Amino acid sequence: MNGPTDDRAKIGQMQAGLRAWVHRVAADGARGLRAVPPPVLLSLLCSAAISPLLAAVAGVVAPVVVTGSSVLSGVGGGVLSGIILEALDRLRSDKEGRLTSSADFETQLADEIGRVLVSGDANAETLRAEIAALLREIDAGGTVLRAAMEAGNEQIRNDIAVAVGQLGSNFIELIFLIQDLALAAAEIQLSLDMQGADVRAVINLNNRQATDIRLIRDDVAKIAQQTGIEMFAGSTDSGGNTRWERGCPYRGLLPFEEGDAEVFYGRERLTAELTAKIAARVAEGGIIVVTGASGAGKSSLLQAGLLPKLASGRQLPGSESWQRIVMTPAKDPLTELAVHLAALSGASAMPLRDDLAQHTSEAHMTVWSALLAANAHHRYQLPSAQAAKLVLIVDQLEQIFTLNPGPDGEPGRQAGIYCRLALSGD
Image 1: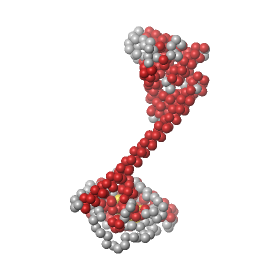
Image 2: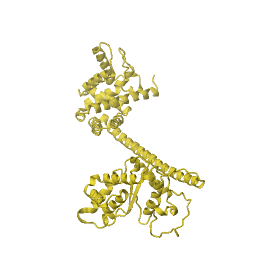
Image 3: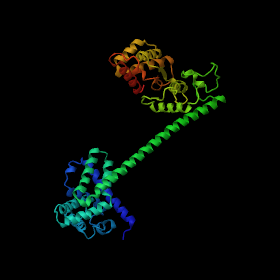
Image 4: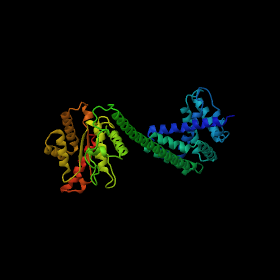
C-alpha cells in the first residue's frame, strides 16, 4: 500500500503533466483554444494529468495508474478506471503489444474520455464527477495558471485561463476550477509583490553599502593623509590638512561653493549617496534630480559637497578628469551653456550655440567634441572614453521654464536640449 510520500510524488507527476500540456499548447500558439468544446478540453486536461503515471516501458501495463494511489481512489473501479484500461489495451493492440510512449497513451486516453463525455449519458455524468475529484486533488486550476505564467505570453496566458475557467461555468462539478484560478492568481500576485519587495530591499542594501564604503574610504584617506601616507596619486582633495584662512565661514543665505568645501560639514552621507548614484550612471549617463524645499541646501550639496569629491577622484575613480559645468538658467540658458562649452574647448561660443539650437538631436556630438578638445588641452593621461565626461549641474532648473518665456516655446526647446544632453551618456 502506498503512503503519503508516494501520493505526493504522484501528485507532482500529474501536475508536471498539466504543465507540460500548457507549454505544448503555448508552443503551438494556442490557436482556437477558447473555441475548444468543454468536453474535449476536459478530456485533454485529464489525459495530460494521468499519462505521466504510466510506466512507459515496452510491454508493461502499469496497474498503479488505476489502483496504486489514494489520489486515484475515486477512479479505481469507476468509469475512468475502465477507460484507462481500455485505452491501454487499444494502444497496445495498435502497437502490437508495445507501449511506445506516454504521449501515445495521452492521445489515446483523451480520445476515449472525450468519446464518453460527449455522449451525455449517465456514464458521462459519473466520469465528470471522477475527473473533477482528480483535478481538485492535484490543484489543476492553479497548476495550469502557474504554467501559463511561466510561458511568458500574455495571449496564451489569457486564453488558457479563460478556457479552463469556462469548464467551471459549463459543469457544476468543475466550478472549483474558477475558485482555484482566483486563488492561484492571488498567490502569484502576492509572491511577485514579495519578490519585488526583496529586489527593492537588495537595491536599497546595495545603495546603502555603496554609500558606506565611500564614507569609509574617505575616513581611511584622511587618516593616511594625517600620517603622511600618499594613497591617491593626483588627488586634489586636501583631506582637512589645510587651515581655513578666509575669515568667517558662515555664508548666511548664500550657498556654499566648491571653494568652501573645507568648511562644508554635515552632508557627508548625502554627498556619498549622490556620488554612488552617479557611479551607477557612468556607463549610460542620464539625469539625476536633486529635489528639496527651498533653502534646504541643494546648491551647497552639489557645489561644496559633490564637486570636490568628483575633483578628488576618491569616491569615484577617474572623476578627477571629468569636466564640470555649473550654471543657473537666466535669460538665455542655451547661450550660457554654449559659453561654458566654449571655455572648455577654446572654440567660439556662437557657432556652438547655433549647433545646439539647430541640431537638437545631435547636441551630444557638440558636447562630445568640446570635451575631447578640453581633454587634449589638459593632456589627461586617460583613455578618451573615460576622460571625456561632463557633469552638468543646472541649479534651479525650473528657471528654464519660468524666466523670459520668449517666442514659440523657446524654454521648452532649451529644456529638451538639456535633457538630451543628460540622457545621451555624455
